[in-house]
Image (tube, rainbow, N blue to C red; front, side, top):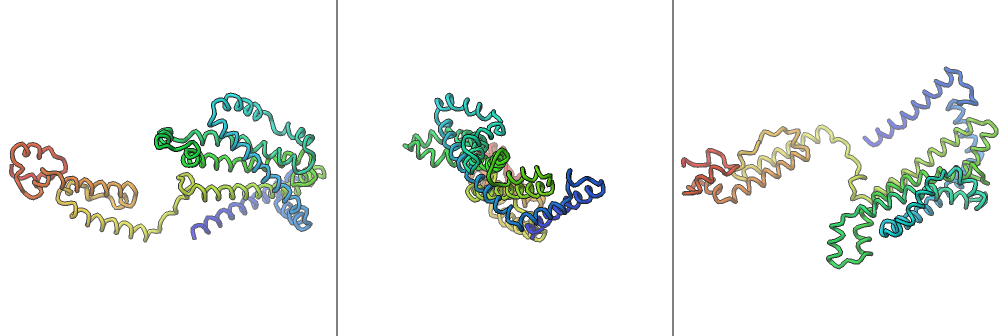
Length: 354
């Protein structure tokens, strides 16, 4: 129910934003060629979807984005492995990578179109170039984040470099790689659209350019909405894959929703019952533990940890010879009397008349 409520609130926020946009445009009398109202954008979106033009060009842009992301990810992962594992590769390759990254991809797009033509190939190359650098940097950082003590331990056990990479370095780098892939996917879409602006036979970028030439601003906004939805969908897919692959990583764990009030009450009662059973089992030496802990704090991880520590302290107290003698009312005798008075955790009433 909570998930459905959150989805409903998200949809309500979108509807409220569109209504505010509609009211602002109509009240301020903004011309449609400057900022069209959402109603006209929806009409243009329905008209383009009914004609089939939007769907046909959407598949072209989606294909270019996915192929560019795959190509850029493959090259970035291979280059990142070489730079992370070899000082020579880092010295010779990384400066040129930074030099190439500093070049604006918008300026390179016309050259890419001239070199690879107006077809899908130029858009794939452009998307790959834009998606390359974020994944490269994250791959290098991830492969270098492996604990060197663990690496030395595996080497001492006779593990090969391939085994160390497969069992230690790659799992340590996966959170970084998946985070870079999430950014690279969106960048690949941007790179494909930029290349389509320069010159293309099909694609959403080509449609945006044609709508711009005809001053169809509502049609442009409808295409921008489609691009936003495509980017959100691709990013959501990558996040879902990341959660599926990195189920063991704390960074992808979904925070649990608050428990109902009745559930919290039942948990408090169960913890108090466990505490009541644990204290007698630990003996009278446990009586120094603060039993009056707030029941609210007992439901937290810190409260549970304190409960386990208290039980452990009580058991250790019974295992100590002097405390065991004091617990059973025996005289520890001699030097043990002075030691017993300095032993923490033994109540004054159990220290005997000596």
